[in-house]
Image (cartoon, rainbow over all chains, first blue to last red; front, side, top):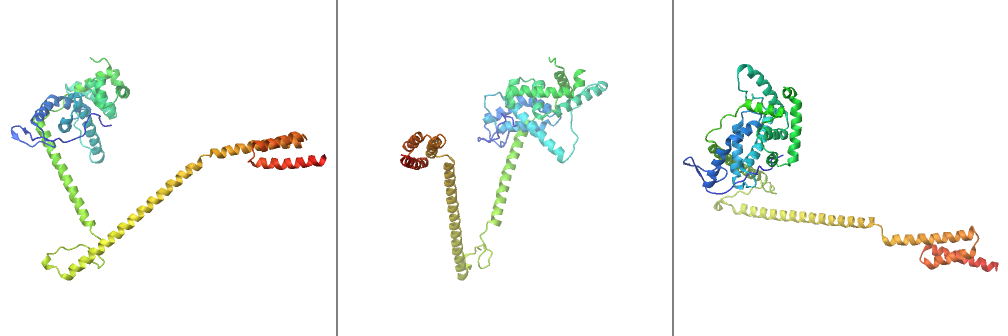
Length: 201
Length: 204
């Protein structure tokens, strides 16, 4: 399911903008000066949060840069259509969730048909002795999370790692609150089954 | 602070994963370049598609072969080089081609007309079938009248044959004739009445 808030891409008309001192044609969309300033402010305000969310949704894989670019590209194209009935942060979260889904789908296809490239998975930080144990449990958690269907993984990440309220998750995913709770419960049940030993420890 | 062990575990794993690698400082500029590149690709794609379509039309959209065996493509030559005979032949061919296209158009129009007529007929037939499928209330009433008359006649015959009550039977036949005069049972009742009255006349 496509995330409800991810708007369709569109173009808007306007005057070319200037960036970094050099005259530069604006991309896909021509922007007014105020829109350019607004876009840059949005990027600087939200880049870290978007990157962190993408990092988590991709299973702590360091493939974040492409996704972040795609997120802000979609945001740039739809900046004029952004409605103030949700916060900008919620809007960007919705786009990020969507882009991560697309990215994972593409990666899955690539892996299935073309290659088995080494994955740049994050390694736990820490001392040499405890790191081995930590790495093992970290890998288990990562695998369990990756095994979940996207719709379950997303609610888990948004709820427990991003600490978003249920209502906001529902808004981001374009579903009812009840549906979020149901997904969360099912995801928890699966994670509990997969990580029973670690949870008991 | 989370108290749920599963939640704790997830948060611990997240903390162990650390942070994603730093994003480039010129991210807005990169995003703009990416958008510009995509726009160009989109335009180039549209242009390529249009070129392919044009090429296809040029290859397959040429007129039908000429009757004289030519390839059907009219060669445009400067007017001063055109031979009078060739120009005449071309004009003839164009005229013939127009006539052929007109005939083809007429034929297609005729086919369309026929198809429409068949469709209308089918729609009318379907409507009639629907009407036929529904019971006619007049017929239903007629059948009920026939049934009632037949019951009365049956009753009269029983009175006459089983119980030998001729007066009652005559009375019943008369009632049938009075109440349901247009039915088949009324005709039967009339016949029986004549028979009975003849019998009574004989016996008296």
